[in-house]
Image (cartoon, rainbow, N blue to C red; front, top):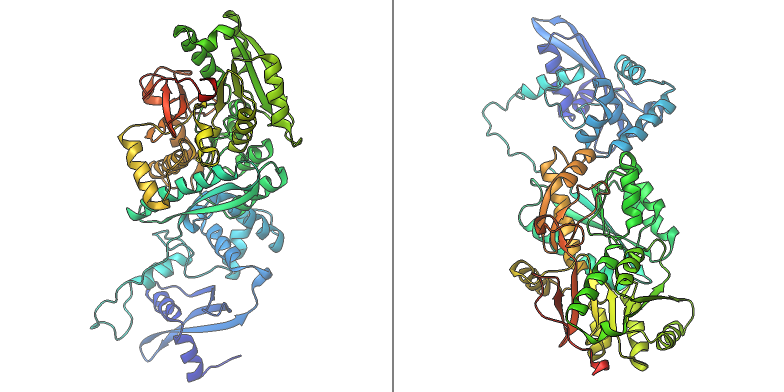
Length: 565
């Protein structure tokens, strides 16, 4: 299609920026420029603007626009990146300018090498400039680059359009701003589903409150929830792969999705990742591979701390001359969960000094009557203290039902599971008297009470005693690091801010600067409450989770469970 008359002129004038570039060419005393642009219908044009001899004393430039197929079958995004490579920007600077990940830029540059059969950035840049395979306007803006085609663009921006001198300046059009995205994998089915609701609600409330205050430096924040099936490694890995491909700016997660495969994939992507797997094994891998996994942070203390907490609990029982301590028989129920280590070695050392016998009872969850079998075994052992080594509320509910059908005089000590509201909503009065612990729990202070009230207004329900507030805190930890770093997509800077800063949240204080990048527990890991989260011990009393330790966080003391009365 070719027009060299008024029709052609009208066609070109419709591209306002092209006429401005032609005027700029004359102002800059340039002879010729060649570039590509795409119109609103995504049609590609090769544009050539040339200076000609003065005509009747006037400077003249001619414009030739040709509809073309994309050279080398490039995509528009690849043309953007080729243009910025030609300007001389690094992958990191291109990623910041286009607000996408450095990993994606690397992939596009590799595609350019393959499509153009040029094998260096210098060769790409030279060929693109010589052949005019660059895009105007400059992707991401000019920002005083002062190089090549951008010089034309800067000059064009400074020119007034003919006939507009007397017009009022137009208002700038609002530009759409890409939100900052937090990926959130959650268990849609299987064990952990109920707790995922807590996690989603806590994160959703944090995001809503941040956006109500104007977002992050004017940018909105949004969640990208991705479902997986708890206990299915393939489903879990697919959820994380999805988030990585969507180029989220950060990931927060609970405990039901840990695997080495997942952590390796996130480590390779470099995306800041805050999780609550509560596994010493995960912490050790980060400690031993900081160069590879330095973007991964466990926001609460590890599973081994539960042994420390139980030993401390037993110490207090002895000090109070409690009936449970007289028999000195501990049974640990262990449903299988890969990698879980509750600190058995420490328990055996500490309680062994006091003459306690520790019995391990494995629970085969695939058997329909597994909990009834476990209770019969407890009677044979005549245990006075029973620890259920499972994070899942589904296990806590199932065991408590089986236990109350055939109880014995013993304290039931769960880890984490009863923090989920489902524990009391399903058991009702049968939850009364259960003792349980968590390495990250919601305090009973004014900050926590304010959160509880806002949560009730938002979801018409009370939050649990751990995960909702922990998810809320994780969002704020990530946002704080973004604000302190130069840019949210500078992942190494964001990770540096996460490991070097101290933040006070709903569940205590977060300091993730240890070698394994894991939250500290008070008083297990440190006596400094300003950098740690209290390892809280609760008991269900009068239908509420009451903190019974440690001081100074306790709001009550242990009571004899109703099945022992």
